[in-house]
Amino acid sequence: MATSYDAIVIGSGPNGLAAAITMAQAGHSVLVREAQDTIGGGVRSAALTLPGFTHDVCSAIHPLGAGSPFFKTLPLKEHGLEWIQPPAAAAHPLDDGSAVLVEQSIEGTAAGLGEDRRAYLRLMGPLAASWDDLAPALLGPPRVPRHPLLLAGFGLRAILSATSLAHSVFHGERARAAFAGMAAHSLLPLERPATAAFGLVLNVLAHVVGWPFPRGGSQKIADALASYLRSLGGEIVTGAPVSSVSELPPARTVLCDVTPRQLVAIAGDRLTPAYQRQLRRYRYGVGVFKLDWALDEPIPWKAADCARAATVHVGGTFEEIAESERAAWQGRHAERPFVLVAQPSLFDSTRAPAGKHTGWAYCHVPQGSTVDMTAAIENQIERFAPGFRERILARSVMAPADLERRNRNLVGGDINGGVQDLGQLFLRPTWRLYSTSARGVYICSASTPPGGGVHGMCGYHAASRALRDT
Image (cartoon, helix red, strand yellow):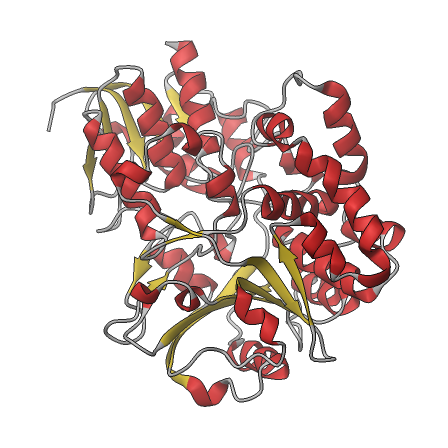
């Protein structure tokens, strides 16, 4: 290790690695410090249940990873990243035994929506066609857009609540339910303004890049980023927690892939009191309760079409999903929670021994919840896949506190780095965005624009700001 660096990055999540790569590409010497024994942050994989079963510890499916403008510029394939594209992006089973499929084809998706076929085509067609122009504005900090009219057209719909958009655009339950499943990724009540934006973006990504995942597990994203960083001369040290920036080797720039709470803890002596107060007012969102299963056979969905997707949204009707998301925000635990399910082993044989399978799922719960949601999650899956429990060989259970122990950025189980409502969607964590009140210290986590998701854009934009300042 060198005795000094141009830049030191705290945290090896996708944003931390993206920041490190951006600095290294500019010819700067870079060191990444990671508290855990393995790199990756929210893109780790591990044997959580039985030998031979590979599970994704946090994120599993990566439409934003495949659609990231920054990742697209990197030779990640040459460094071992292989995307698997399921036949359908997502499935949404219903109680009548059918399922809505969101496919890469807009026309194919619309064909399954009955009376809402034309409405879906009118809504999603123009957005998908203009994604390459919209993406830089949607996945970056607030600034004057290159295509203002295009962005304004998107914004008129995106600013709506998911409830308003779904009920004004669609007339049938199938389309409304499927849109609710997409919008619920916001971790916000669906009646909140701008929740429609999440549903729109995730639907567009399904049609533009699909909802792929890495062969071998999400860890492969971090491994590929780390391999490329090392090829540029960057260094990574694991098992090296940082309790204060003062303990780091000399560096002109320090980029922190942490949330505001950790930033105050490790850099408080360099931050102004006013800025610290702003960080302490930053709001964290609801948490998640997560299960992983080793399975004897695939999940036995009543709707056979669910086997065409690696992602299944389990929640029933729009109203049921809306109630589930509302409950978590009101400090309640839904009896029938909205459950996000991933079944990557259907398409990736490396995830389990021959003939066996893995399952991944979580539901939203109040911040820091200690309630065991295992039965509620499995009951929901049984509702649409009778006999599911009989196929469980072993399970891993992670409550919000367990997730936070594995990754300190998951405060209270919040996987988005803080609430992404109108108050914190654009100016996060403060009006300074990536800069802090301390010269040379930056924040590059999901607590900065564009927020949660595995895309590396927070790290890229923070490092770009740091390079402009040096």
